[in-house]
Image (cartoon, rainbow, N blue to C red; front, top):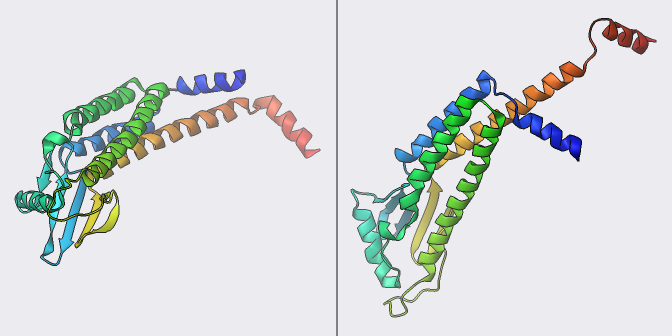
Length: 228
């Protein structure tokens, strides 16, 4: 166990090469997509809405299609089944998500400047946890909306979970839910950081093998013995 811990500590003390630092800088840049593009999109189709009703979920706002009219129309329809209005005030994530992404971007830049593997591993682990928690929070919010229906609503439906990914039939609506550019940007950022970690590990492994390999006279002796 001790040799393994020693090797892991040496790995964390590695200095990132220029290639790895470049990947980390690109990862920080990819995170900024959260401020310029939506994270998720839900689109609802029905016979009376052949063009669909669209809702984009940003890191800080809900934006309906057709100049915001689609969100108003969705809330009117929700009243018939007893679902409360979709309003930004209910999404506590809008208060902390932009700041959390900004903090991750700064930590990513710090890892690139310091150039140490331990900093890169730290921010990669934080990014993984943050992404998993954000996805769970989004899914829980959808579940909560679909299961807190007013019993006195004109139309009675069973509690439901709107799709987190893919499509689902809800009453006479076909609902589609898919990630958008900002989510792909976050995914790309994580992929770049993991790639930088792998490159760092590979460089460390190659240097270790080179240092362990015999050189000069020792190498010729080894080659002679192998030939015999």
